[in-house]
Image (cartoon, rainbow, N blue to C red; front, side, top):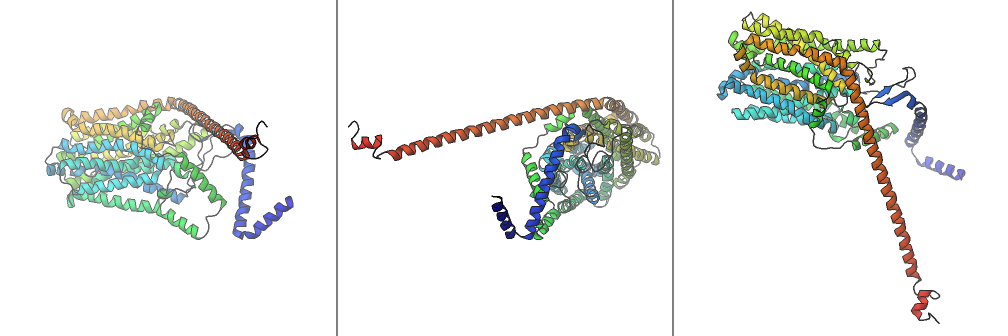
Length: 613
């Protein structure tokens, strides 16, 4: 028998090509390696590690005995730099679109024959959609990946700008601004989701700072561009500029940027499905097939893993309530409250600036736009510096707790005081930035030299932008695998509060005056300090309770899945038994029919009339 098998295998080897023989040998070696790994894991895995609620591994043994966690992302440093650069640029579009026509507000009010309060409603409507739209896109991207959602957002943005450039009445302006916001604001939630896809907690602070720099540069850089365009080319040129820049970005994104969603490509090594591929990915796949490099064991295994991952995804209509579930968590709600207050003060300082500077200094649209430059420079510098401090403080606390730092591997932060690592460095920028808002109103009330408000703008931009990037890093760390949904919740809170603030800020200034208005806003921002102190003190306890609750939920899901599988197996076994019984009955019936009319049987004798003789 063994000789026959051997000769059969030899004959098969002769009929195969050398490449197939090499592939078969690799497959045998791979299977043996997997078996050996399974044996080792089976003997040591239970003692060394347990599965955490957030999907990472909680290491219980000493670092020397524990296996290393898997690589978090296989993307190279250059590819990560390209992805983060494009993500930061994408995050720039929503805030820059919201503020780019601030210098032209007076011109637009005269063009459409409406009041300043009415034209400010276009800013309010933009912010409302800026808070609502990410709730849909955040849940959608968790289903289909990052690339399809980015492309959908920028397509909506493109056509909204086309309509805005061509419209000439107030109602169309109001509606199309909301549509423009729906397209551009979705990418804010996606940006931090991309950062979570490709970075670990050890270096996430710097990456979040770069992405948030785009978000925070927009409110300051937008008026500069808007002032130049409105002054020399007229207000429609603002929307033509957004249309052209958005279209160019979309073209580059479609060509270059790979899919990063971990629900689609895992650590980046799994092949994405067709609509998640960039044009570069498609070209590389065709070249690989042409060169005959697709028949490898590792590639086949990756395709099987990608197929399983695709089967686990269920496409459905986006559910905005998923973001609301995150908002009600104790630690998350306090962080969101602080961020919303800071962002509201941010906009209450920037939105009334054109009318105030036109009244106090007599500036035109271009001059007002240039006055935003100090704020832009401060936001850029503050975000980068605070991101560096954030990563340094993380490493310091990790060394203090004897936790190894690995930028390539995602380790569990369940036992790590991530709240302290992120919030210890936020106090100075938050207090200084809030103090800048406190003195802003009195500087304008006293009609000081222009240098005074410009210096305040620089300090406020640097400190507030840095504080916001630190808090957003903490928010991403609290929900690393649902960061897009968490950011959608943030957008809902901060945009709703900012929309309310910008809608009433002119009325408050008229009632209270500039000085007392910004005393109130700055004091409200300082109230974030005790709120965040509560998060730093009790946040780890709340986070652990959430982990335990999520573990129990996962256990219930697994139990339901196991019961359902057993029920399916029981039904299949019952169906097989029924089929066997029916088969036996059919066999007996057939034998009975065949025996009719055969001499020597009872049926045959009956037919011949011989029964009883």
